[in-house]
Length: 331
Ligand code: TRP
Image (cartoon, rainbow, N blue to C red; front, top):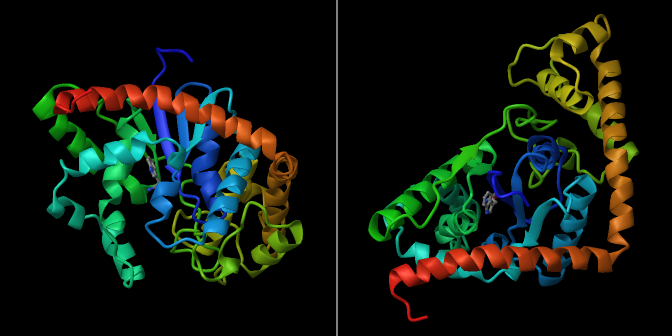
């Protein structure tokens, strides 16, 4: 890997399957970054256990998701793509950073407030300390840029605060990262409630397209997609069903909204929905084909995450060693 390149770090939790929203809003960008950045990506399974997981499901989901990311175009030769729990430095640095993070600032995290409402019977210390683990993920790799959804911005801000605080005491140990919140495709909304983000945790499966949905399912879901009564394919930029469909169509075809408006002038919503469905099916087809190949080649998948783990260890152990020396731990 080229040393001059800036480092990108990002991660997703293996907490469910991937939706079209995840793909267009995040993963597709990751694929592009591989050409111009040193990319480090992770499946953040340590974060996932802040909510109780079924062991068997967590394991198979993590492997499946790993295979799916490769299918989407994460190239193990270009990126380091590892499974967080396999790299011990993350939990270790997280503990250290938690001693430089205050109760008050963690209490102010909106995600903590949301999640503790949602999981009121299991508000564990891991959920509370979640941002220090995320800070560890990022800071271990001298990360320059962290591409994330807007909902994670606060976590990058606290990462910077923690890093600066530590550097203030011990000298320049951590690089201060910046977030990058992509605009295009970033806001793929629910097909049922277009004012809400498309989410895999939505109770209504018609609200999202899963990356592995069959063509029949995709058609059915787009047919059911909520639109207004205008019946005109016109982009206003508002958070409406039709704008969301136009966004989706634009993201998978690369066409501009103006081109789309011309293409569908005088065509009603029904026909447009079918065109969106077809375009999405075409877009997902090669991914789904690769997925069936990878998932039946478990040895290959394993070789990829084992290799990535070694590479992640080399970089992150270097940072952790520096941190421990600064603090005064006996080496
Ligand atoms: N918390 C992130 C999410 O739920 C996932 C994540 C974990 C992450 N560690 C990270 C994202 C480090 C960016 C950088 O979306």
